[in-house]
Length: 398
Image 1 (cartoon, rainbow, N blue to C red):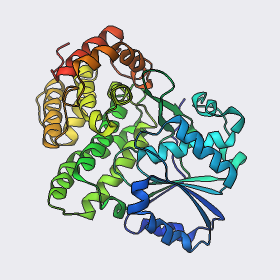
Image 2: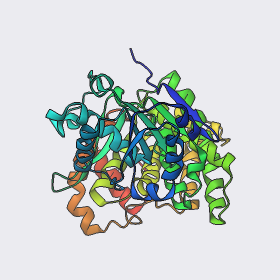
Image 3: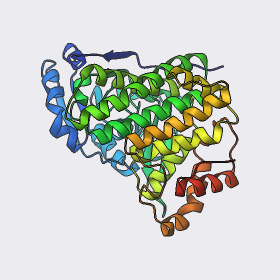
């Protein structure tokens, strides 16, 4: 038995932010970062003025949020006691807000309120805090606005790692998708965030926990992302913004997050989470190549599913095996077109750093949830070989 968890509302399209002006809040706690505060926060404040709500802004979220910064935000939540938390930003901001909420609800547990999360535990977040969560993504990639997981950096040990935590109560009550917020995205972020969303679609569709409901979202999200990422990327080279294209990407990223959060991630994200923390590589820069390696590793086990993805975007082939090979070739071509790296060396990882960290890296990757739900079993020795190939950018042959 399984269940499909969703936000209560998804508000999307032009002027979606105006939905906020229709709500009656007493105190709104906005979680954001310094860049979003400077670029777009005024759009949010304009809508909230109509509600006469008191506003508290916590804008200290870094690109790679830690458990410690989340704990700081949770303490401020406990002091202000809002009736709505609004996460306004990219995946780091939304993951941070999702981490703050259970820490606020169980202050006696501190960081353990996150580290000890059981996906099926009854947290009673809304009952304990009298608060709802609203996510407003400003990038088209993470899908964190509709997922029940949060990824935070744990720097308590010598080797930093990105740790995943989750509970279905962390799914937002409301997600607001307004394409105006993507207007200032640079082409590098269109590419990196887009590949994150594309990787969610791939991972969720190939996962051993895939199901009819997640498949429907993920296949269409994959198609929308594959078609529109390069268009938006090349338009951004000249400063052009086509909001119809941006809206497609924004919606597709949420659909992809919606789908994989109700199936699971696989090897690609297990690798992406780990090398991001260990080698200080932004997730948006490493996840595309990690996904490419997950396709290569899994093609012998789920060529029929990979062939489905290929057919969805018009790739041709006489058999499921040929379709799988052709998609893998096209995936690498897409990475190169978008100026994204295909090896750890291209990401700036030196041989010295690689040798020093690889044992810890493999241990962390094995313990990531993406390894558990990968369609082809993967053990320590498999990861040794995968990482050796990944370091140089060689195509897998095993």
